[in-house]
Image: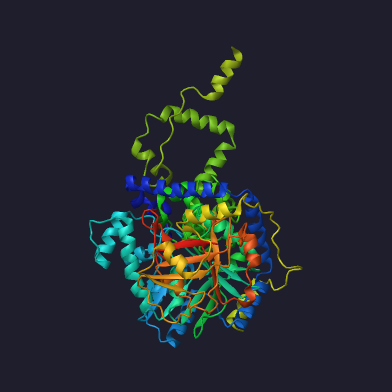
Length: 456
Length: 180
Ligand code: SF4
């Protein structure tokens, strides 16, 4: 499986520290419970989810129309609009805009898209300092890591880890790991970065076609502060972020924060319709594989609001950690997106799933995540690295379809069970046996017992 | 062909919808808008102050800000911001009962940065200006004149370190709703 990502292998380091893995599991389940509480306070919750699903389907059907409308209206409001077909084009456009502006120092608020495009290393290689200003993102940036969750980027780290990272980079007291103390230190450190910045980059939660405006949601206020100071604001969005009008936000903002963190709304839900006086506001619309995804059986995955609820509820995510997915978006939705994007490389993610469908029930956009993962499996199993798995399943199917053969083999196994050496049975070639044990076979088969009972 | 045209061609979804999209969800209003609003606002870490009259002096006195720098954006013109210990009084256009969010629009009367640079943001809101949910809220915002506007729900906050909530991330450390 050279070059291919193997989720189970990648999770080994995480699962080896069982205490920490347990803590991670608990921390995310706590967020899931907060979500449940917030959801219970909205009687029309299920109707809202259905509406979000319908809204996203409607937007997909007229996506080109809405993107054109958004561009036209945004331009009329004084916003510049750029189009990028792939990550490279996106990075080039952002870099060019920064260069035009003579910007050396950039503050960035949370944007999974720029992570996807690898914008930070691209700009850093060209002599531009990029500071992630979301606290969680700053923590992982200082630690030279990647976010392990799309809403809680540093959820894999404990406060002692953060204390160590901050002591090294911000000069805080290494033994003080009080979150309030560490947050205050980060505030001071980042306040300086905000004041020095020549430009701000943000993501986009929603682009309003009718109004020609973009909406950004944060709790920390970093997008608002970052964009309020320098004269250049670049907002980067995947093309699926467009919605017909502000009317849609009357549905989506009710779903987003409740699903994400259990808050009724994010602290800042900010709308940018015109550049600030004397400033520039540039929106970069990025495809990077989305138009392809939209043509496939995975189109529904583009409805994702990036709330993270499917991660918080996923038994596999909670016990394996976000980094084990090896992709910019982890968890159920990440597995769908990654395996659709590059089946050969990310195929194993389709199996990082118990098919419990818990994600389907929490997803505010009602994406059939487990169905999509099942579809991914069908595709993945055709891939070369999964031939052994497929052969195994074919063999099982062959035997199970032939009752007499099945009876013969089980009878044979009853005799051999105690005889076959363990090291044959759990041979390294047997991937199935790596984390599993063969169940003990019953001495009298069920059929025999059943037959005996009926006679008695 | 430009990148834009290539992308749009790949999408093949240029047809306009037969009619504009409209939300049809029936929303349930909280029983008591005011109680719902204050509960949500306080739940988001904000403070509530009831005043009969919301002059700068009355607010400053009630909040004990005599020695602090207070700017009142309703009457003063603000060009420069000295954030150290700054309190800013801003007008809340209307509030949302279900989540304690207040619509704020600087309208170029004060710099956008004031809302995040001030240590204490004081939002003055008439208590009769409450809508039940975000569905009504978005119908109330006038986008045709908007430059920048936001729904603010309490002071800035983060829980990025071990999920412990800390009030005061990058924006205001403290946020008070003055209800008149
Ligand atoms: S797939 Fe659904 S639950 Fe998962 S992040 Fe996206 S919107 Fe949230």
